Length: 429
Image 1 (cartoon, helix red, strand yellow):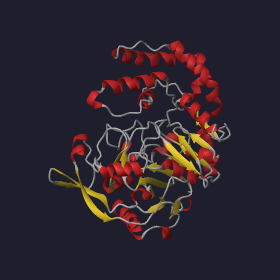
Image 2 (cartoon, helix red, strand yellow):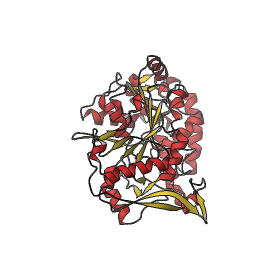
Image 3 (tube, helix red, strand yellow):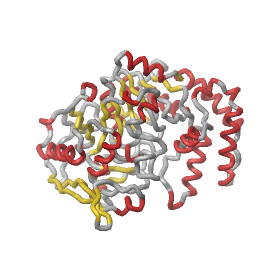
Image 4 (cartoon, helix red, strand yellow):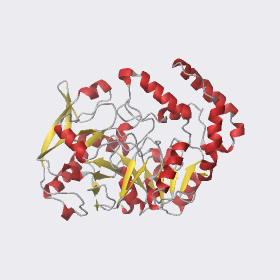
């Protein structure tokens, strides 16, 4: 099967957008299968910079794209994003973009609740983007969600609104907030429905037809495995499953369609928001990594925390998600460092660990065990073949392969689309 699934195998922000954009030229369809507009993907094509949050990254190439049922959809954010990239010359029409009819919607009441909870959490803040992602997923599981298909039946929405408002009004009262303004909510939905509905399709059927025709499907994950609600650093995680196994349930196809699982990994480690980070550098080196890597969140603009490459976490995440090969990004950020460190294990209370313990208190206390690696004086920036890389850079990549027990398929050496070294073509693997 020629399908490829792209996921992050750190805490997100690994450079998935560029890799998906690069692979989209080989794909027939690109599919987003989980998350929402809390995901940020930056694509650099020549002098143009595209910042996407909800749209699949293949949209910039004009590759037919799908937003699957596993995504929670903020229709107003979608409209703003479509209009923004239209101003950059990219037309997003129903011929190019299709949205699953069963996608749950993110509403203003979800954004309200997200912010109210975060503000009231004190030391327990998780560091959400306050965009309503978590509350929307809660309503989906609680069978209260308003979905894309409901926009075509707004005159029959009262029973669903009864369930939804009964839940949210009680929560809002606990925060001394007024009940949901049902008429205002309905007015918002009536206004946005004509924009969304032309994109609404039974995408499960379209994907089934594509699979039977032997089309190449590229599945695009959001966030990273370490933010998975089951397998990540809980509770400092997102509200969806980010692992490759979600491709089936999040898009409406069978579990065997994931194909080659390409894990995107930075040559160092970053994290946005709260939560454990064993290799974090609160010093000049960490600041230098952040400055060189332009480490600010695409969605929030928040400064990312930076640290050395953690082979323990990447090995764990790759195993959990069945990664076939990795794409190593931002190798050029490490140019010029005299010494580069790789975390190869942890210690906690005198005990050695080759994985991250599950409890947050233990995760916060583990001490990294480092292997020091001599850096390189040459540059990797813009390299497009192994021959363009300094010998020590190649040695660093090979050592990462050994430690994470997974081969490198691609190496990215700048944000530019074509500054990519292809080691193994995922679509031909």
